[in-house]
Image 1 (spheres, protein in one colour):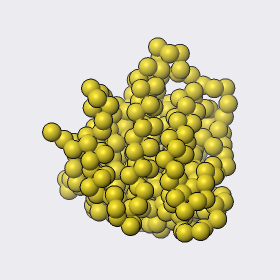
Image 2 (image 1 turned 30 degrees about the vertical axis):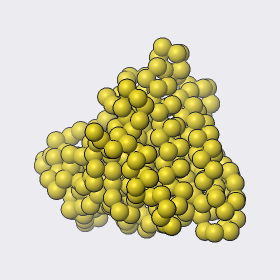
Image 3 (image 1 turned 135 degrees about the horizontal axis):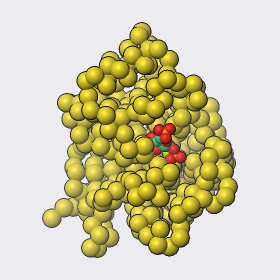
Amino acid sequence: MFKTLAEYSASSWKGSKEYDGLEAVVAAIADGAQQIQAKVRAAVLAHAVGTTGETNVQGEVVQILDTFSSETLVDTLTQSGRVAAIGSEEIEETVIVGESSAHQYLVQMDPLDGSSNIDVAVSVGSILGIWKRQADEKVRDSTLLKKGTEQVAAVYTVYGSCTMMVVATRESVQGFTLDPTDGTFRLTNPNICIPEKTSCYSTNEGNFKGLDSGTQKAVEELRNTYSLRYVGSLVADFHRNLLKGGIFLYPSTKKSPEGKLRLMYEANPLAYIAEQAGGAASSGKERILDIEPKKLHQRTALIIGNKDVVKTTVAVMNNG
Ligand code: AHM
Ligand code: MG
């Protein structure tokens, strides 16, 4: 039988100084993910698809499920008693939770990535980066602006044909599948490493004309070498590439010169997971995890996946 998430975290993190309290944070994410996946699956029947009529801090239309997912994870993370502050794609300001010595972690999240795919029954997910607060560090907006290298863990979930949760720490990347019969996450994909063989590339080919000439050349080379697979939910595209070998690109375009994806809660957590699994992530100019963040909702270009293919692609982008 597969180990449960609770068993895995008890044997891996409980009692460790470095990961003190992490099991409560990850359990809170698992709890939130269960609630979100249930809501996503019942959304059409519950009249919960559609927009709230508002736009978020990014100027994007807010879906009812975006708000539900953000509120759910803020609640479960708050209840864990271990999180000091939360940054969310759906909330303009930092959510400050607590400053006691137990509030050791800082979380940044995209609570429902790919939400434009919900009403067409396509996979969506949640992405979360986890940092540690310095002892006695005052919690304010700038507390969350730490580099990706300083993450202590990162998590994403996919609400697809099954619900999965992937958790990376400095030691390893572990994949858990939600068992719908008893509501527990079970360790189905232990010690994930990106396969060396790359089989596909994922990018929005519709943006091709808006790319600079070097990036066009890089995309042409990928097109001539690999199969194209593009879901349009970053978390689902990344998940497939992590398990099967592949590269995902959302470069700068004429429409989004700074890139479309968000550094703190999309690029950084997935870059951390990619690196721990033997892959790489770059903005085209530098390693994602080395970018010095300036603001919570900062955007970046993202090239992520197999290490060698990321390296070659970035080289062609810059010299092509
Ligand atoms: P979201 O966080 O609001 O869902 O937006 C991010 C999404 C990613 O999941 C996906 O990779 C990208 O936007 C798709 O963008 P496009 O439709 O321009 O290809
Ligand atoms: Mg997103």
